[in-house]
Length: 144
Image (cartoon, rainbow, N blue to C red):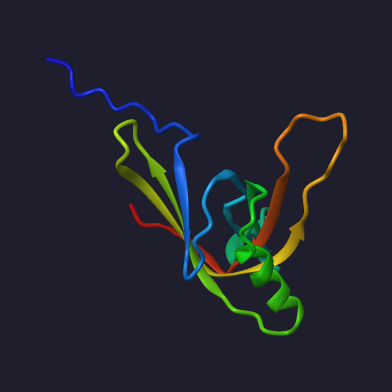
């Protein structure tokens, strides 16, 4: 008897939660990645191949894109950082299954905005006006 089928999650069913910010309708979340630097080391009496040691962990900036609305929450967060008050927040990205249940969760630790882009406008266009914010952070973990 074959095992239960385990299909991968769809990338278009997700939500984003941020401490104190109720922003909905994100169309894209990208860039969350982690890597380790590699430090090469060789002692003088060893063979010509260096040892490879783990270095610093690095995390890519996360980009959030959404259709422009009357919500100023993310813009205000960026503006307060520009004015010198950097408030770091935990950002949670949650994948949702076909039935609407949470199935995978990534937490981004100590995030704060480093870039904001207002929508581009075009008198002959028909697309949604898109805003985006880029978040720097100090760590990411998959919690489910």
